[in-house]
Length: 204
Image 1 (cartoon, helix red, strand yellow):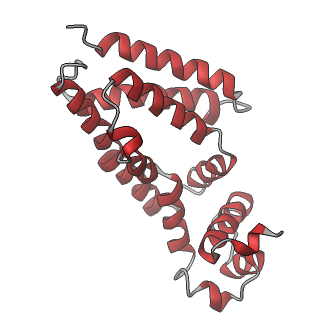
Image 2 (cartoon, one colour; image 1 turned 90 degrees about the horizontal axis):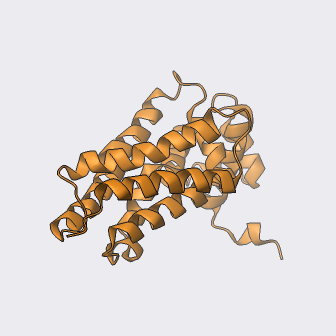
Image 3 (cartoon, rainbow, N blue to C red; image 1 turned 135 degrees about the horizontal axis):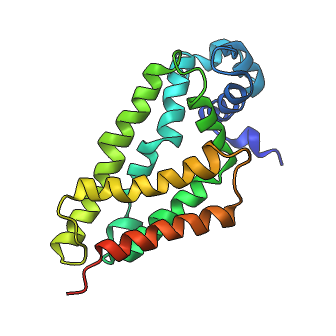
């Protein structure tokens, strides 16, 4: 059975757009190409999105920090009362995300054509700094209030933790000649997490 035909047209448009944007660039991909790739008429595509700009904004919401912030608000995270369990789960979820081929296509797209995509990069950065960091900080704040974590400034504590993981991504994925294996990424991320917990966990 062809599952592609069972997928909602909006999701098919987003997947096709991600594939084409990563292959041809944002400027090098037309709405007509996207529509043909999905098997729709261009007029039908416009019933789901106003154009490429809106498609790209939807991709940022799907793959960017906003999706991480939404995940952090889910019960899987809000019911965790041990900061070590929280940090290890967050790290494991990031590892899955960073090894996802579609997520790598998205990041390749976001870092291409920087001038053309400036407004969309701002959208990404706003989600990162206004939502994801504050979402992690909110968890750190409750751990600190429960005297489980030493976090004098939960926002800066979140930056410290997330920044260490981001440097792993930069070293082993963005700046590497070839993206590192999942095992290499996991080992590097686990070292960051273990060091962060050694610095911040409270034993009293």
